Image (cartoon, rainbow, N blue to C red; front, side, top):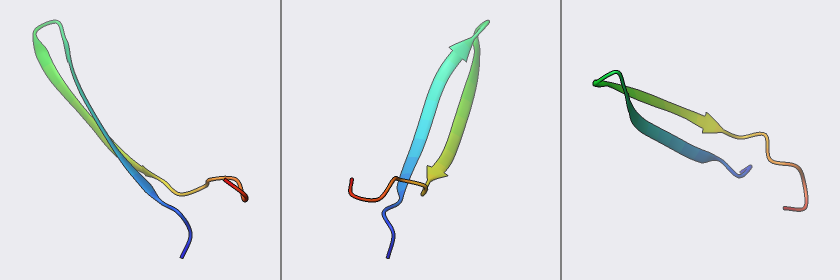
Length: 31
């Protein structure tokens, strides 16, 4: 099974919370 990493970034812009989440599964081989 290839390596996968989930990311979740939360930050505030102009007093408004922004939530970004995604998945990275395109790691180069040999990592």
